[in-house]
Length: 310
Ligand code: NCD
Image (tube, rainbow, N blue to C red; front, side, top):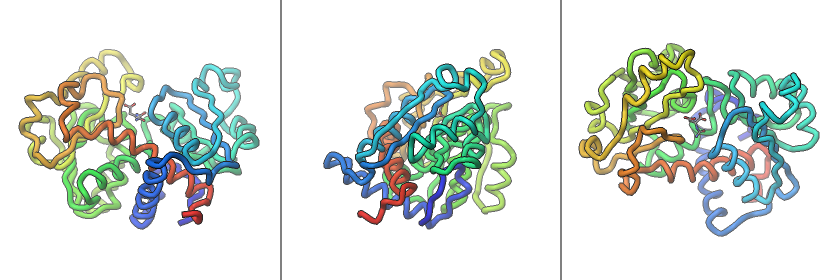
């Protein structure tokens, strides 16, 4: 497959997913035995204008596990020339001369696409506002495949902030590429999944239903995907407070969960999953975060066209 940028989930067809996930398994085998040096002559730049732990560090770990180097602006809104008013286009024109691939996280939707419009190196969208988080969606679906043994024919509950959460939004769109998936969207009123995503699901014949009671849903699915209420994107504190804390997966709720089901969360969690269930074998969220390294290794390798060394 020819991968130029990673900007949005809509760019991926099913055959691309199969290829990326197979490559991620190769990357996992490499990571298990240490490192590889296939990207030894390459530099990744990470430009993060929003907070991040997993996404930035797993990109950087992925690059280093393949022998590459990393340069990073981790608080770019405050410490890069953006604070002086530089546009993302100008920043990218500079950073591309220092690096071979650039991962960008930004609060404004469309920033990665704007960067890709001027960049001569591959751009990775590491989250743009409430719109897209394509590498998260890829690692989420990879995790489902790894845990359930299939990426078709499963039921998933997407729980929490589906309006401002870019992770569940991107995952729902990616599920248009699998067969026999059923989605139950569990939200309080006001933070439902946006209509454009529902329209995409309808157009691809993905079955979905809307719910508000989590306890009525846990026993009906293979995957419970919890999400954080995205405080930073709410117009007011009151609107945030009205929905925060609505869903918490705790040991009592877990009793209704099937033995072969899994619990996922893009993390960070702020109360959605009780720490008392972390030791449950169905709690897949830390394995999910770890898979981020393998999927990002695969993407970096594919973007930099080095996969021929397999
Ligand atoms: C998510 C994000 O940044 O959108 N985090 C992540 O990348 N794992 C989810 C969140 O912040 O709630």
